[in-house]
Image (cartoon, rainbow, N blue to C red; front, side, top):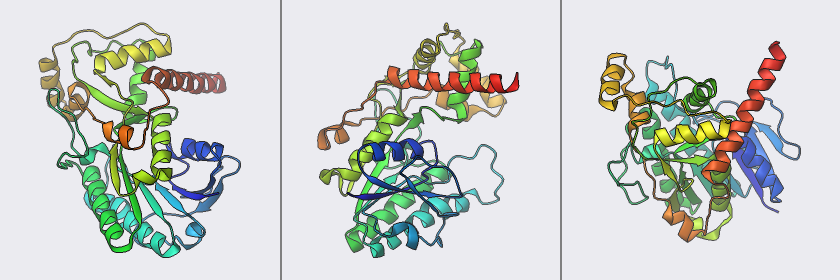
Length: 325
């Protein structure tokens, strides 16, 4: 029975990944930053902060495969005077250090959760990102992920370590944070949203689908040395996504039409042009490669993923209300 090390194991993706790996009969070791409760059957190892000096000796003993999720992600209120250096410290140097120690420990495969931001921020018209596109990271996070991918390929060429790169788009599901949960809250409250004029197309992935894809990349022989883009397989406009979320929440649609060009002007004046780009810009993904090479099919439809997410959101909201009443 293989032993798989999952970094970032107590996070939004890591926890359900550990649970699914256990369910499928794998032995699971979870690398966590600080003491935390993990699902029964998961061996937890405290790794502390991840950077170029982290000692992975204990965590790597007996490990066959690593699924590396831990990363410094988008920071809403950046306080560092050198943000790129902070991203590189964790996402590049921390990843490279783990991979080199993994080689010495006899690890066979290293699955790296990268980001679609390595490809770029938007697609135009009917264009879609694929593994064949030239990379075009445009923020510190994307740059750090791209540099980490390059470092891993160098290590693979030098040592024979099997590297698999996975680039997901926006991930949603129970435990989601950021703009997605704010959108859930606004729709649940019936807040009027000027989204009806959004005719864009964006790919996303439900966390259960990403977990399934990561396991396929960790276990399928054909995945070695490959890079895969993954998605639910359905592109939606922001307006259609809002309607789908409203249905999942059991609410009526609160979207109304407001000229997108005027919204962009207002957003620029308010310093929120980047948020407008996400709401009205397109980001399509072509994930045919992983489907054909690994025979991967997402186990959940977008509707199923959104309903599970909505059920979690309601349980969190009702639990909070109960606790404060």
